[in-house]
Length: 140
Image 1 (cartoon, rainbow, N blue to C red):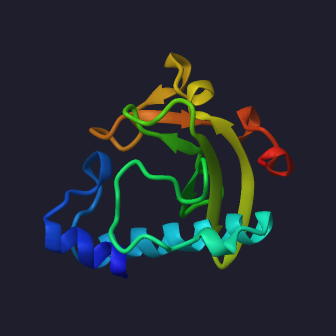
Image 2 (image 1 turned 90 degrees about the horizontal axis):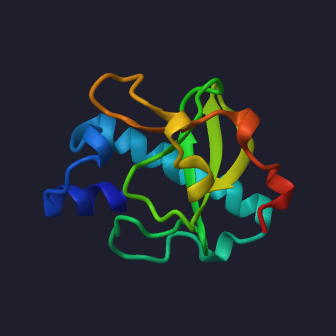
């Protein structure tokens, strides 16, 4: 909730054309925070969470790790075009109260032409299928 209130106060836009204000934007932040908690719990890194008082674009959720949480188990890992190619990206899905940690990859592994897509029409990004991700147990 803090992230959304800071973003709204600063007039920041949603990433890649996503919701910026209101309940949809807050829902996105809550989903993301839940995914971050899932990965931090799995890795024993909960003490690293939620330390920043202001949202900072491009920052890592955990040291060197950016957690991408999606609302459907069938969805792929999203990596934006302007992301750090050396960062690790972990995919979490939360659907019907079921949280799944699917895997991870380095940005440069996912930022390939073959993954470039625009399924939402007007919001292109890299979409990396779960079959191309490394197992979660290799994340650290």
